[in-house]
Length: 255
Ligand code: CIR
Image (cartoon, rainbow, N blue to C red; front, side, top):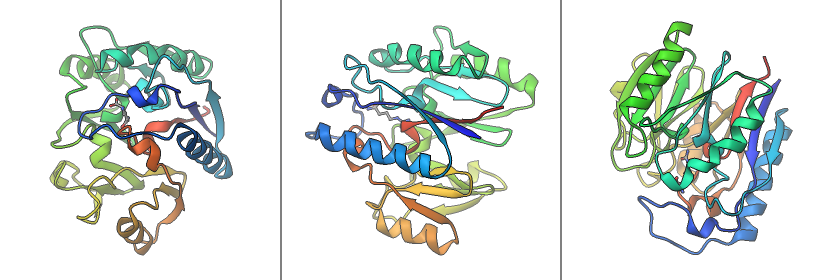
């Protein structure tokens, strides 16, 4: 059974971190509705959703993905690259503790879970403003002995690695090739986002279904044409906070 940790939307989300987007008004009620629909979609796919309460002093707390990287053997608790987000990890670590041994990244390491794309035993880490080599060295020290392989990936023009590329099938990635090079992912098939939808590379694979935003209709069609089963979830309000679909959950197997 899959478990998803999620967390409610902070009433201060308007004060979120922004790197590549202008600050636009965020409709809090609409963001909460969309987030509930996201949780409902996960539940409908058979995932057990464990929803943590929002912490209203932490504007970005809904983006739990950045707080942890979970593998079968343990959970790496991150040290987010934006100082204002570093308090977010405690509630997520507490929620993970019943399921996994939790290993914290220590200073001066910093890393956001959004920079970590795991495909089986391969762990790709984006070299972003949020993630440094010290944190990756700490992760390697924990995970390489367990058989995981690491690859540092250059990205440009986006916040996180998973803004640029996500997994949509066992051997297939959805990618914006202007933000990350296809050649980084040897042996994987790549579906490109439609060039008019550069922010559309973030999809959430759950079992054999892909949760995806209807706001990127041309890329949505590409996923369907590739034979993937796509479930529509609108996260357009959270997108104004520079978050997407993977960002709103930490999903793992109940081992
Ligand atoms: C931030 O800039 O940290 C948040 N406003 C958005 C984080 C989105 N998380 C993710 O892509 N994993």
